[in-house]
Image (cartoon, rainbow, N blue to C red; front, side, top):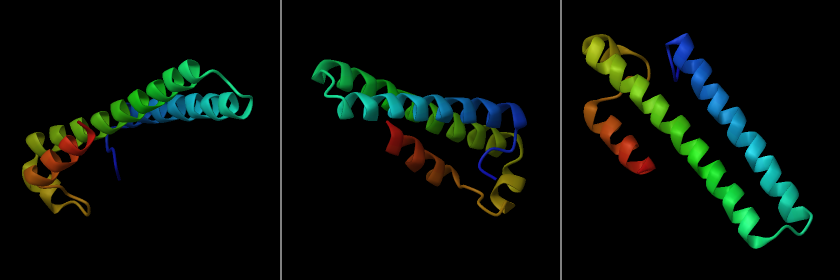
Length: 92
């Protein structure tokens, strides 16, 4: 499971759904010949929402790793500290 904490999972899903709505608005704006500035502003909002969702997922994994490192490493998709760092940097 990507996010084990139900509250964290809800927050991530809310961010992703917000990003999906923003992306739909970008698509509609491009289809209707929207202004460049407006489209880019909307794209920036989508990108930010996706980044925030990614950071929330990584933060949850880091918390799990710190709270119970042995269990985190034993989990099916358990991440090492190096892997978490690499994922974090991929979003930065």
